[in-house]
Image 1 (tube, rainbow, N blue to C red):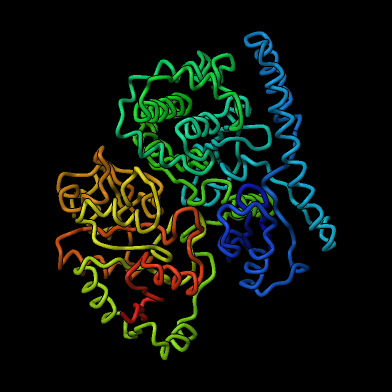
Image 2 (image 1 turned 90 degrees about the vertical axis):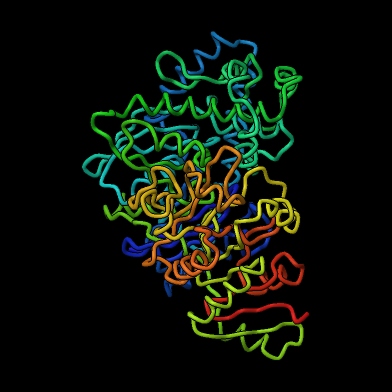
Length: 568
């Protein structure tokens, strides 16, 4: 059974699952080099099909997770009750509620028409498989996780007229426990705070998470509750009359007035705390501290690694798995995984997110060997590790282009920038190189032997079974030892968002980290995505070489055996 997942909205991309195995997945932006390119993913489709040695006519189903449509069983009573409630509580905002629905219908109609035109042009209409947007998030998180069952939660701005679902997965079946409308969207709440503070909503929410650590979250919590909160029945409710409207594009006068005179840091801190508190209340309704269960998370809100830490630490949560491509960039994989499960009952488990195109060492080597602009050094893995360690000791910045490109927002040492984590000032000068404005420190990459609180004494509460830490989707409180040795990857609140490397998953990086700790005493290296600000993560050797030429990195490592630097 060959299932193709496709998305063409905020993040376009494609995924191929064959016989229950994830063969390939990629985002269109990596090919077009335009960040979050909102186009039909022809390049991504061609790539994933090539990885399966397939043509379009070989595909059995084409899964689409953006616009399954209004479902009377899922949405009718939910929206009837909410609209009646809104008319009673906020009659002056009825026109705004209607506009929200109209905007959602119009946006989805255009993109679904684009998808259906593609199907018709290729005579594939009968193979369409529409997946509810939030099932493409939440259900996919559970399907792709290593857990047998538990709770799965989706939370984002909106999709198929919902902004949150809570479901339980038992004996191979999903049972929905709670849904919330797009009127009551935590994703829009956090996105509007992002816009209020001068950043781009639906893009720069991570900056708010980082900025939050510099403020006092308790100062403005009452104001945040005026915007959106949990009622006595455990339901999320947006309060339109106080300026909360689930849209990024208007009605900021009331927000600006509400927070007039308040610092950006306190606004960010209070928004972060309020988000955590709301989702804690919602999820706590469905877990039992006496019988802990596993928790799966997906949807753009769970790109918030501090929130994920808070949920991981709830009594009643045994372990968490965050779908590594948790936002709408993950919809191709999510839709394909759900369609696979619905069709065959097979679970497409995730062991790696290295699902994108690779770079051929021989072609890069031959093209640069006689190029006077570059120095090229090729050797066996052991020698390359020594060479890279030498450069790291000189505080050099190294770009990695290793194997298949990662799918999703996190660079996981296939398309990463690495360097020493000792120099706190690197947050300024390396961000300046990449033209970034960040409040979060860089993230650490750590070998598992240095992650355990009993082994390397780095992350409080870390355990070998914590799969979320392999994908940089959760923060941990750092020990004094780690904070002292690696200040460049420790936030002001003494947390870090690690990628923990296991030898079986990446022997090269594991050996490099062990060698680096032996030389420097540092249990981690900086790992940040290999891209300039507002550019997609690099895909090819050519993309990487342009960053080398611009001085973003000092040298490149291609596929664990080839080191390239500028001749000067």
